[in-house]
Image (cartoon, rainbow, N blue to C red; front, side):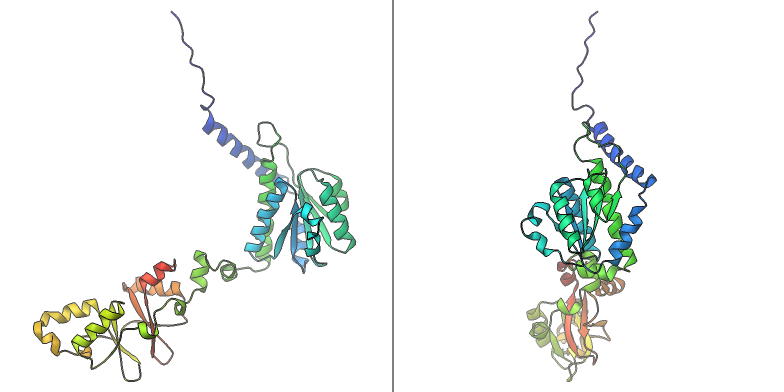
Length: 330
């Protein structure tokens, strides 16, 4: 009897291999945690003492990691920028000021461009540091070296920067978050740097920038007849009528529901006036309220529109839930 052996496909172990790489990188981070460099504390202290910006510099994959760390730092309240080593040696070094702090990133702790940059900056009084995975010439010329414990790349050839770049990036995130915490950076500060983000809109966007106002408002006098107020509500296309007194102060609101209920009396509806149809004492808000808080009020009372008044109770606008949805609040 002939036994047929099926040849294994090279794709058979894809999932296993993907998990293996992730596992190796996770192990690299755990190894860093278990053998954490004591110089890291000093690095945080030096960053906190810096009156200028934090300048990150690296070549190749280390440069990409440096850019990511710059993004993290800037995002959570620490002014920083990326300096490309080659460009720095052709003019960009001029962007570094005397009070700035240079942090070089190099897996091997070497790099001719970085050596030249560090030498120049040290001569003009800048404090310099190095984040690396191995001792190199840079370790001997910078003011502070933080060597991250590292054994092997996740790459099967142990060549491509994988685990080494992962631990460096994770360490950079840790630096940024801890510095941010020490500075007292909070949600409101975060929102200022992310005004278009969900949190930024919740914490910064006020209703005054979203509401309808002026000639767009369906303003109705208390004595206005049914046919007249119906025309006003239809023309303004906000689905409500805002009833005010002769001083433009809010006294009532006419909704679609109010109109439907009023129509039950039949032809007599045309004898009614705004004061006979309106809902008295409607919900209202001030123009300085946050858009997110407005949404909370609408959800609490199950309404879709809110009248906006000033501190004298005069009507200045109206906000509809559709305005909040368009702004990305709802």
